Image (cartoon, rainbow, N blue to C red; front, top):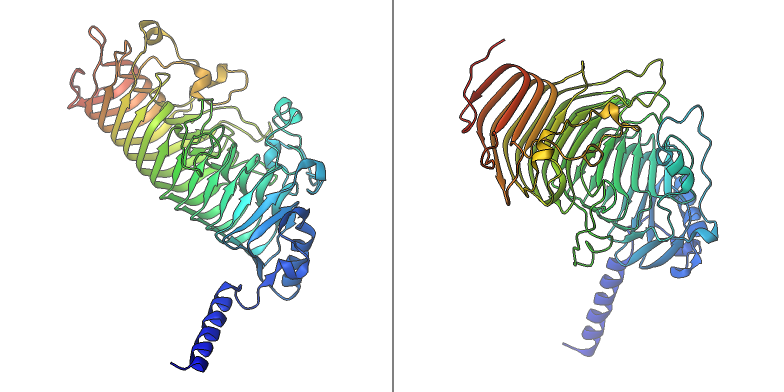
Length: 510
């Protein structure tokens, strides 16, 4: 090959590599609008200029090439894709820079927590948008975002969390896509979606300290292939608050192929995976507690829980929870409980319209779990006069730690209504009188192929059912200490038991 041909080939190769390194045609490179990417200069004004220019042209991709972009509030607009390339870091500015937007005014009384009331005080926010995306292999580092403030802790039904308390906050948006990005230090919420429709969250890695993903009053949402670590709050948390001024269902929700955990913040990403000290909430998938509208037609499948709390379904603010299908969960090193289903009467909403809600038609199947403490087994609890209805648990295996005492087996577990805050947490209720499963105020409860094991002795029965009507127990195996009954039934009507060693087989009676 002649020198001329070699030079031509080299030129074509360099041209190809240059083209591959460029954003897609029509992209708005934030460097063109003055962003430096040096990690020291506040780049949010330049990024907002690029977003505004793309929106004015009818939409497009706003592109952040490799670099560190110190940022305050970014204002998303319709038909915009915010794309963070590999090597790009969007870094939340310190509070001292006063770079975040102030919280907006909330009309009417705020029944919901402050974090669900305000959106503009966020790193990235959008309201009433259509066709909006956040994509790319870059990193969103919350940096200076806040976690909480004294006003919020003293007044849980109102008050701003502070400036810059969420990484991504979207309200009443349609056709939303967040894909591939990695997020660390996400503030009070890494992602908050409220009143959004047709949302896809896919292939996200979130390593934060408070809530990872909150899906509030949303319809037609898909969460897939995400890793969410949140040692001191919930990892993936569907809610249904009063933030839109009325009860609003979260429905048609799919959460699949996700991993949630409670490792110390940052240790998911760096590979150390250090389990955090157990608090009252850690790294779980939880429905509620904000639940004025409720939850309907929701699926959770193929998910892994690691060093965190178990699955929680909490309906406490007057809404309806129905048609929930959960399957194929594996849980390891779980604290407090593996499964918690509860109806409460906190009823945080307008007194004239908020009444005790409804929980019915819940199916949980194919769960394998190991626990790391003896606080509670599976809990399934309603409210006196308001039983849960149509609860199905099948193919459940749990290995418990053991360690429960005789005194604990004899204690009366408090009703939620007896708690001052009526906040529904097993941590607040104390040890359950049964180590494996406690059911109270339930109608039509079917348990099939349930197996419990113990790492150490436990002086509590494996099962306690109280105020349960239409109980079916089929293929139940659980060890108990010498002299301890396998199951205790108190005011249980229409009971059917078969294939349950240690429990007398029965036929339905009334």
